[in-house]
Image 1 (spheres, rainbow, N blue to C red):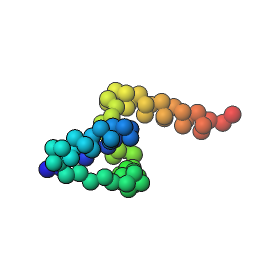
Image 2 (image 1 turned 180 degrees about the horizontal axis):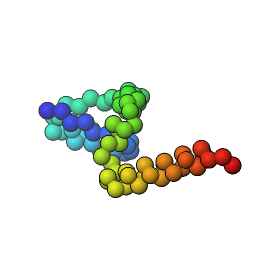
Image 3 (image 1 turned 90 degrees about the horizontal axis):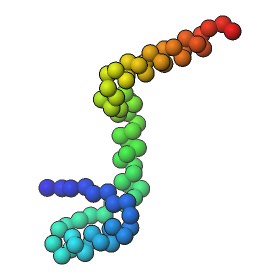
Image 4 (image 1 turned 180 degrees about the vertical axis):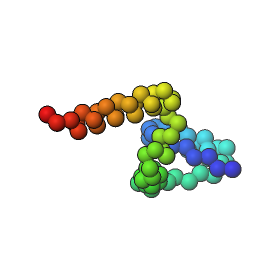
Length: 78
């Protein structure tokens, strides 16, 4: 079994490492640049896939209506 833990504070890592060693749990530290690189790959996909299901249907429809109205304002002659 594998568990991935992202530690944001250095002092949290200093607390966790001795505990892992005492419990004889194997761990591997991933360099920060390599860890953040995976986020960039996943975010390169379509935004609709990334944020699917984050808004309710009603809010999504209201947002689409607002976008349509905003676009039509730009198409009007001044």
